[in-house]
Image (cartoon, rainbow, N blue to C red; front, side, top):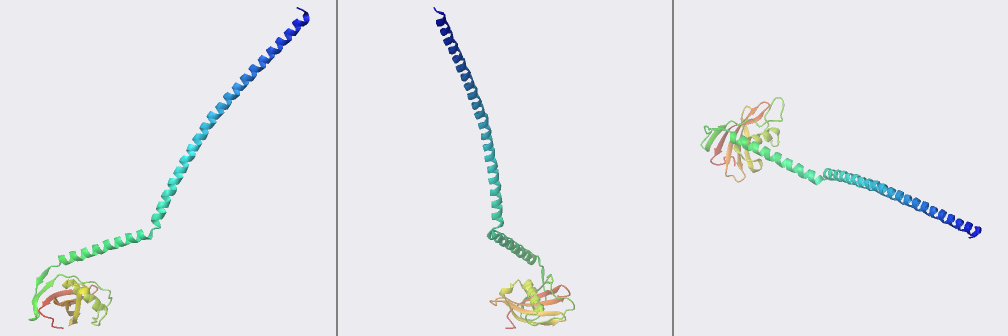
Length: 220
């Protein structure tokens, strides 16, 4: 073998060895790059998922708070509900007052009394209380219609007879003596006729003192 052939074969071998070495280097670099990209994708993707989940939780919390605020505003801005509550409270208050009045009527104790004349079927006294008054200072009785005395006398008469004001007819109210009054009243059907005696109590108003159930209406 000539010297030139031997030298040519050595050059070819050396080139092949260099090419193989370069290919190996490229393969290793490519593998490292793939591993790096996979790591970045895995770790970076995990963070994105956590942040997205956190963001969703925050949005859900915000939506919950907004919903609660809207419900509270709807309740506060509902005048019909407020009016219904006020009506219910008024009805309960009226029922309580009615029950108190009924209890007061049941607690009144009466005793048989002497009739004033022969037109009396039954007469009795009771432990009625003065009805109260809006009048102040020295009292002078007024029998004029619409006066404060007449208004308060009417309240005292209903207390003693049990008649309601819208079911009572005043036939006569007159002077019964010093700071006293006498009234003849009936129900609207005139099936019950009463003669009621009243006395004035300073600062407390008119007080019923005796009731007579009449046989017939002598003031008609």
